[in-house]
Image (cartoon, rainbow, N blue to C red; front, side, top):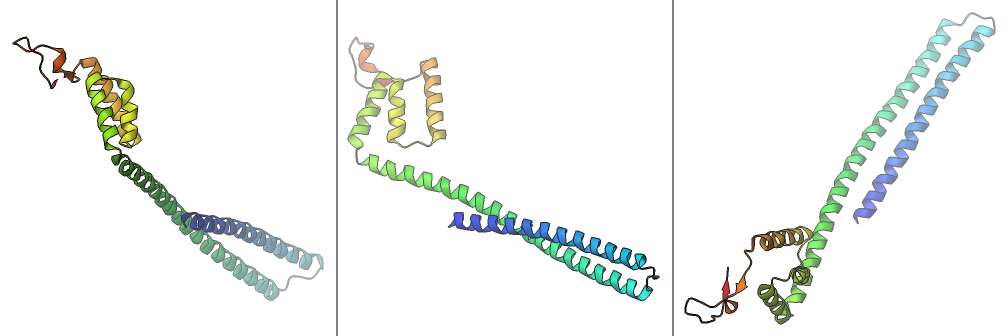
Length: 184
């Protein structure tokens, strides 16, 4: 629907541009006709009749004013159509973003059906801190590109600081026994 509106507005802008050029051409032709008329009057050897000359000038001025009024009206329409086009483009961009969010949400719902698989992937990641599982987790949870980048950046930071979870069963407790659970 927005594409149709955009095409309509673009068509109107194109028509207004063509009309503007046509009006400019008519105005130039009118000025040339007036000049030729005055030249013919003077070439005929007669003194230009001041009344006839005044009438010709008045007629030319009225036609010029009429053409200028049309040009101004078309210019206003052009600006209005450009504003509408800008609004439609912003609206289209927002709607496309909403569609992408909806598609991600739909995929998340689909992936929730496969919760056991997701649990196993996350569990494996928490056990091994394997960065190769991050894209799998991001895909399963349908992270947005921004969320995806944040998770990867934080994962790299945590790996450098060593603050990731490590299983307790790998380290004996103070009594020398291996315990279950995770250390931070």
